[in-house]
Image (tube, helix red, strand yellow):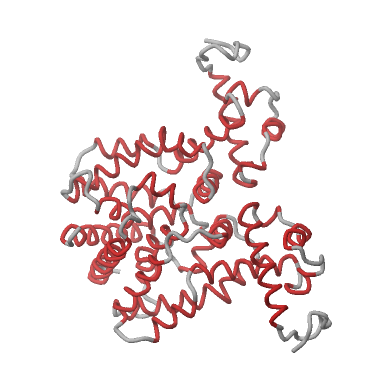
Length: 219
Length: 219
């Protein structure tokens, strides 16, 4: 395997040590971006906070933009891993059962509190060029799986205009629970988190009834 | 009426001129907070950008914290005005028809793009002490109206544990459409905004079917 001293122009085969350093920089940068927003964080700040050489960002991420893009991709990965989603999609059961498992998994992730949520939401309200890369490499493939499950569960073609609306209605409540600040939502919405299994049951009951009604309604 | 030169300790009766100045400072501060976040904006920056005397913030808002709180309250007001909501709640029709009008109004607000959305979402992902005031004076009364409409439409008592969950499922899709960046959501979710009346119809169909199912399901 190549060393950390390999020339930057070569295709780098990651070493265990290099991976650990990369991951460490990613964590430190993620927290800084979450607190201050991407524009206020310099590579120097990241390297100082991570206690790595100033060339560390460039070595592992190519540039400051490369670092931010990697952080954003990692943020989406932590929101819902592609491996978990693929396992559900490739597993047993019909499309509706699989959608139910996705909702269960999303509810299971509620209450996590990490930099990834704030980095993700900051990017959504104020998009940067890194968003296109994140959608391409991380969010897009996962959304395609979800849309395909939804189409199958509803018996609709992939280009049916109702799919995007049903996607929104099915997953917006889960997403809001995932990304909202728990104490804020708790103060205005009451005890949503007291009984996660009941919450997951509710989300599935509501969504499946809504999907049935949407299929019956005119497009 | 008192003048802008009235002592700060008196109870100020707003003058038309004072109100215009106050509103101007609020607008300028709202844009600055939306871009930079509350912690990075000083009263001096606001006064410079608004071209008002440095005492202007303190005169109209008491302090930097007072200014931010006023901006946050104004942000929620622009999201959905209490006057519009009260008019629906006090108007004709049953609770379900009124919920439908609320959804129509929320969909009607989609596509607006102002500082209020970003200030609001920034506060939600990273709450400040001003949030309690905003909830108390602005969000709370509106949420109480919505929850009461929902309870009436579902035939549930005000303390039923299902209400908070149904509130989430009914309004999260509308909220997400309101606060999300349109171009981002469009890129990943397709043409949600092409046909606003169809979108509003869908949201109502989905929500009412979900509410019916939630009432039938065990709590």
